[in-house]
Length: 194
Image 1: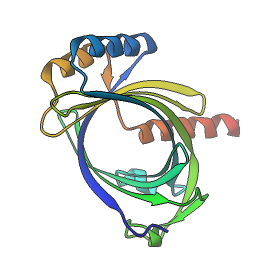
Image 2: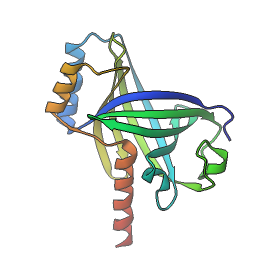
Image 3: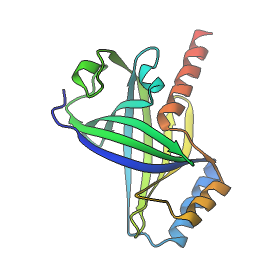
Image 4: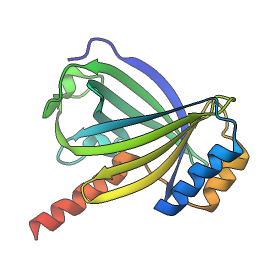
């Protein structure tokens, strides 16, 4: 189990788009803003919870993220949602493998629950950083039979107002990937049960 967790606090906004609007916003952002740096990544998140979703009910996401050949155990706690801005505390540790079960007693969760792997969500991400430090992530995520298109902005104090206005005009604000994953997970269970 992990020995050392790296912690950080993040402030971000999330927006869901249809496919065409997503690519329109990607082109717009490239033309409108000076991009300090840019990169593409692929990641797969494996989500864990109890059968009654005790973590979800407490605004916690527990996942193992696979990037290339590395695994990271991540615990994300949603602290606040004000004016569409999520504030989260995230803990992360390098992890050796991908287990089917995680034990709460061995994590920073203050719980003796056992958390089972529920499934995976694969994301292709393009990340851009603006000169003011704002990070914009263009995510295409696949899980169960769904594909969604999300743009996330991460910032220190406040996001660029003009960009928030533009994003808001062409989308709707989004809940977390984990919430969307659980909704699809529950729908998949219902279809299988029929």
